[in-house]
Amino acid sequence: MKREGHYGTTLILGALWVLGLGLPSGLIATVLMLGATHVPDQDQYIPANIIGHRGPTHSVLFALVVAFVTASTVTYPFHVSQRLAVEHEILSSTVMIPSMVWIFLAGVIAGSLLTHIATDALTVGGGFKVKPLWPLSSWTPALGLCTADDVRWNTALLSSGITAFVAVVIHELYYSVLPALAGL
Image (tube, rainbow, N blue to C red; front, side, top):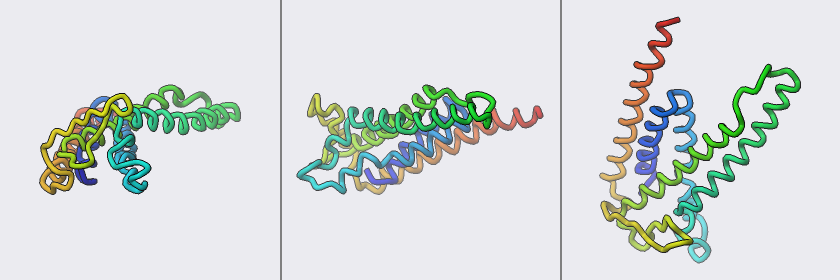
């Protein structure tokens, strides 16, 4: 799929994160997912004789490794800086539990990358089919619903994602944020 299609499916997942986590955390998750959604396609900038497009970067293993490394890389400095802030009385207590930050980041990044893989599986695939179970299996789930450059599908996915995300944000504002503000 093209960028538009990937952004659309990521926004649909972002809408689910907003529903599950609430508006502030869901918005943060969505922004992070939108930033990570094209990581698997970085294989297009590597010579094909090294890593082919939709090869290892479009696998569950890749998604889990990137999520683990990203969450670990961000969480450790976060933990150290938070501990130093408490020791030097900048903060009175720990603001966020580092393990929860790690779980959040790992889930968000893995969700974004897996959504990218699932979106690419909607296509015919051509010579570039997704192998989600690489290196365990060479199974290629190309659903064949469209081609990667199909303008109608990419536009429909983007439109659906924007609609779902905006609807959920309005829902959360109406049922969560506004009643809380009215009670002030």
